[in-house]
Image 1 (tube, rainbow, N blue to C red):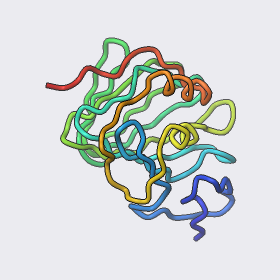
Image 2 (image 1 turned 60 degrees about the vertical axis):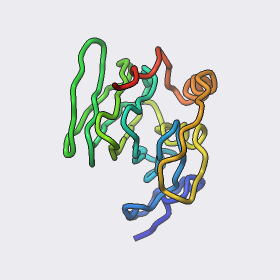
Image 3 (image 1 turned 30 degrees about the horizontal axis):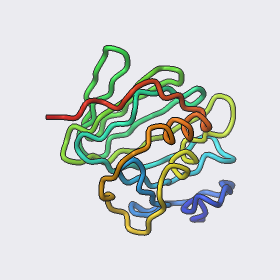
Image 4 (image 1 turned 90 degrees about the vertical axis):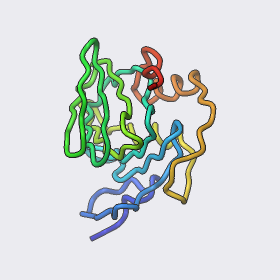
Length: 173
């Protein structure tokens, strides 16, 4: 099998491939680790694996064209859509349709989860947004937390079809 999808600069997805557990393109992304496993360009989906620390959560947002499927591999996540909160643990799947405002938060010490996005209008671009906001790293570990520029996040997300609607979830006690 071909391993062509382990590099974000290679959009070819014409052959089957396997990405090992620690394989892929690693990024320190919004104070957690993101690993692009499958690029969206030229295909029907993008796949990004995340490892996030307790309390991590993205700003309230909605995807204009992309549906998301979260697969929780380790840990516990709380998903919020409107006034509804649902908690998922290892082995759970959470589906977030496009145009529905949502956020989530890591409840356990860390969580490892996969995000699969598929677009209704063209190539998924979620992985491109991760690469644009992230800092490439060879070492697949959590980054040292740093200040996040919400204006830059909103600008890059908007370019990739994601509208920021509010802040991340409140810090956990």
